[in-house]
Image 1 (tube, rainbow, N blue to C red):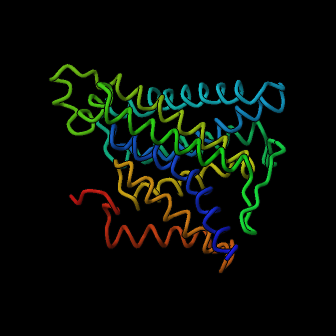
Image 2: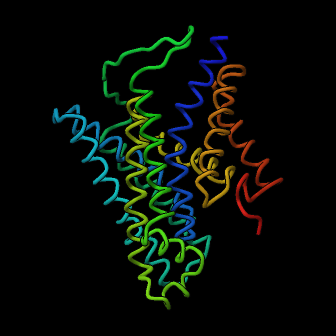
Image 3: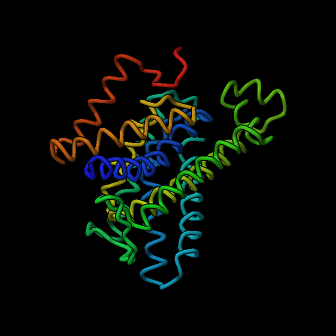
Amino acid sequence: MYIVLQIVINILISSSLYALVAAGVSFLYATTKIFHLAHGAVAMIGGYACWWMFKVLGMNMFLAGLFAIIVSSIIAVLMNELVYEPLRKRGAKGLGYLIGTLALLMLSTGVLLALFGGRPRTFGIETTIFNLQGASITALQLIAILLAVFILIGLYALMKFTRFGKAMRATADNETVAEVLGVNTRTIRRIAFALSGVLAAAAGMIQGMELTLDPNRAVALAVFGFAAAVVGGIGTMRGVIAGSLLVGATEELVLWFIGGLWRNAAIFGLLFVFLLVRPSGIFGRPK
């Protein structure tokens, strides 16, 4: 029985991480029609920014986390301003954006490797371990799950109940009509990328505290987050949650019963199945 409970706990932990990445990917695609795979790199940048403030400069975790959010948001906005907006002005299509986002992902990973090296970094935070009928969960893991839930609820409320959210949804539905109605779509895109930086920073910090910080992990986060967004359905919060839970469950079950070497293959297999059978995802709208 404790094995089942431990697997469920592990699924919730990994899903909370993937949900933050998937929410950023889904949120930006709904607003800008760009699959921002470099979101994974922004997450790792946020994680390293927090680690640097906390471990190297000796700041408390609150200030380190705030610094990570600011850095990730600035980097995300700069990616849009320096790459995506020029591509948009030149009338780039899907392939142009795909090349751009892959280049940003590789460039950011290379910069992180140059600055911090390839050795994994850890926060080294001591934490309380709770035992639940033989299964265990740490206080940090519990905080990570609650943080992800809080951020996702906040994002949903922002999109659903605020004037800014309505302007963002209008931009996502039809950018030309939104501009005619007086919406500054470029400002909306800037704010969208800044908000994605908040999601990325949270994901990077959870990654660093739960596992380790590794520049090469940026690609894995991008792929797993993309898979969760596509499987659940791009542009919907319930799709982000469902897709992240399914990806997290697939990963944990493979790790427990088959082996870690099959983890990536299993996630790609899940993604291919959905692309072939239901490309719109679980809660996406077929087009």
